[in-house]
Length: 491
Image (cartoon, rainbow, N blue to C red; front, top):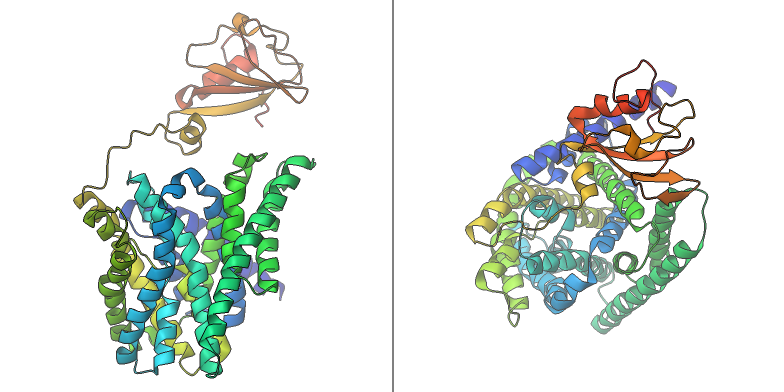
């Protein structure tokens, strides 16, 4: 048992490292990273037998909570307010139209009853924000377009979930009244919206007023509130995913302590959950079964990309101010990702006769959408002349953290035995390109000046070129810019 656990831990470590490194590959070739994570899971399925759809669904929902929460926190209300109407139209009318069109063709291609064919359409009805922005993130696309895609992706998932669950209920209980489903939709969306705002306001209040022993606990607290939001929402039979997205939107647009710390943690955690989720989903698929439905999957994928999505976009944006070129890009940027595959586990767990068929076809549709659309979105945006010169200046911390500059930050704890302890900064003879940017002293920030005295116990923040790392360290060893044998405690 111990040997098995050690092997599992080793495989998980390899998956995380490969997942992180694969993001560079996906950025370079314009392919969503989810393709590589899924491929890793499919390769592992050759060696590990895994068919636990229930565990996969739970892991998928938890991952979606984290991803939607992070997406909500990154969304600026200032950016989405002007495009809220077209985004909501895409998330509702667009999803309904996509469901209907794909459902019609699924009836012919898969030879299933109408209710099941519409269920398939609902499962593939929503887009994936993570997939879209992993491709468009490096392009300077018009902010109105990116905000529309972001708002649509965050709000169309609840619509797809509602349609999927409602159609499964309708299949299992054909006597279900349509009006009761409509009332259920109003309840789910309305209460989900209220729950997201309410818990979001409560989270902001508590995070800003509670004093925790470690700043690292604040991101954990924020994630805890996101999971709580989902739990409370589904307990009262409302849309948990919508509630989580709105809760993240509330936090991200409020005055929040440790906002940057929470954002950075969420970003990394969301990536980790994507790696885990897509790997699990890849494990749930057997490659041999995909070859059996290849032509059906490819045909339905083409119909989704070239017919259903464009019709849904153009009709739902009929009265919007988007140009033909912009609508074309929005149509092609409707990548499918996590949500359709997670929703495909619902028919499996419900015991529907076509459950396994739907899961395999949906899986094929998502893969082809990610590969074909993912690798062509950026060239299409350039061809449509919707890509401009990026004039936005990144922040200093972003440049350093992302490795896009030749400089680096070091923070150094000052020991009483260091020669510079007790010296003024002006007396050190620092080179022009080595700068003291801040000093932490007795839990307070001291702005460094030439007359500032470096005291034992200080933590000094230094900005210097990477090429002068040794010279920078030598200053702290000798106080005169020459290297000595002692080590500097770098923290």
